[in-house]
Amino acid sequence: MSSNLTSSASIPLAEFRSALTQATASVCSLHHFSAGRRQRVSAKPASNMKTPKRILPLVEEGLVDQVMRQLMSGKEATVYVVRCGEEIRCAKVYKDANERSFHQAVAYQEGRRVKNSRQARAMEKGSRYGRKMAEEVWQNAEVDALYRLAAAGVRVPTPYICFEGVLLMELLTDADGNAAPRLNDVPLTHELALDYHARLLRQVVLMLLAGVIHGDLSEYNILVDADGPVIIDLPQAVDAAGSSVAASMLERDVTALANFFSTVAPELAGSQYGNEIWALYEAGLLSVDYPLTGRVAAPTAPADVGAVLREIELAAEETEEREEERRRRQTETAL
Ligand SMILES: Nc1ncnc2c1ncn2[C@@H]1O[C@H](COP(=O)(O)OP(=O)(O)OP(=O)(O)O)[C@@H](O)[C@H]1O
Ligand SMILES: [Mg+2]
Image 1 (cartoon, rainbow, N blue to C red):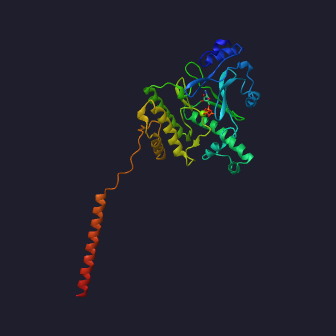
Image 2: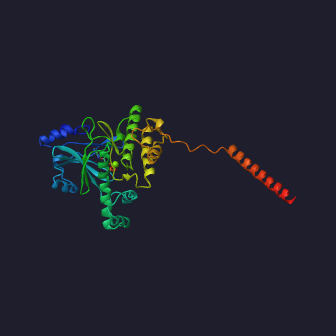
Image 3: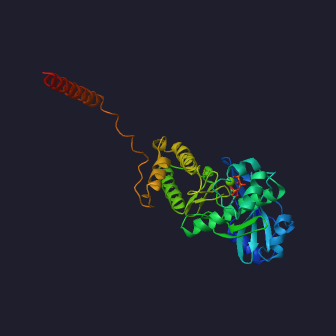
């Protein structure tokens, strides 16, 4: 591949493919979008790229043919662009628990399903076995959620497999075939902000109907591919039915969306879509086409104090009348 591929923007997928067929993959550069600016993450020639140790088991199993380059390294994982046969995919390599925040991971354990009570006890105790179990639960949670959500029609990257702590999934791309940018790095008009907000709320509803709450939804965990917003990064996803924190997590996710989009569409500030969606879900009324308003019904009207006082007066009068009647009868009996 010629050096003109090291130009300003990300490398189009089409160019990756043509480079592969020529079997001369050399210098290319995928750019990672971060904190509002395009950030170049790697300029190493792909042909010189040593297969990262963690991806070797996938190469040995024939799941991956070549690691093209590192796409980015985040808090919890490093993401690589890989070739699997003719396909360009991405491989998310989870960091060890002690590299990411293990405590944070544990905070999300509630609502997760573990295979048996021995595992649950070990995870609670934090033994080595327990940590290994917690790691597996953490890593599998993302692929489980992705499968469940993809089946429910939610816009997430297509998962392929999670093997030895590496998740193989679809590489999301923009209209030009470049690695899809984060929502945070996409210029928004007022109209686009409202459109994306509505589309994402629909995704949140679809997810909830599939029993999943993201738990860390933000403009950094949403990519914008050629067809619009796609939700990523789900290892902390929680089971809507099995978690006491489900309602607050949903509320937090939905508020994060409103806060982000309200910088361009101020009318979204203060909306209460999260509470509204949860109330409908709990009442068994939620559907993907339910017309959401962003408002929740006000608590029932305050008591009519005047009416209450009148009730009290009437009760007092009745008591007085009964008392009078009792005294009259007593007098009659005495006579
Ligand atoms: N399927 C995908 N297609 C394209 N790019 C992806 C995909 N998955 C992840 N990425 C890229 O890798 C980045 C990190 O992925 P992810 O958010 O899943 O990991 P993370 O470790 O939680 O990262 P962070 O700490 O930045 O949130 C994303 O912001 C995105 O740029
Ligand atoms: Mg992330």
